[in-house]
Length: 73
Image 1 (cartoon, rainbow, N blue to C red):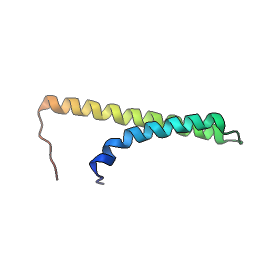
Image 2 (image 1 turned 90 degrees about the vertical axis):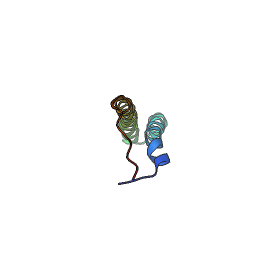
Image 3 (image 1 turned 60 degrees about the vertical axis):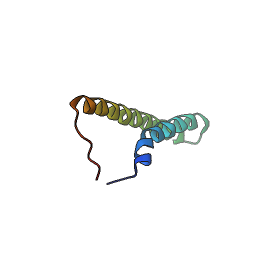
């Protein structure tokens, strides 16, 4: 699946913002299971955003060290 570069580059930040909003929302929602659901979704979004951000950073730093060429299709 190919997506445009601006969308691809902004995905980890979207995950982090969504996670923060869900965590904040879990403090204000008070109906039955919704606070727990918001907390779990927020935590998963934060973890996913950090994992993607750190994986990209590590790949880009090792990619520069190897000197491999970038392939644009």
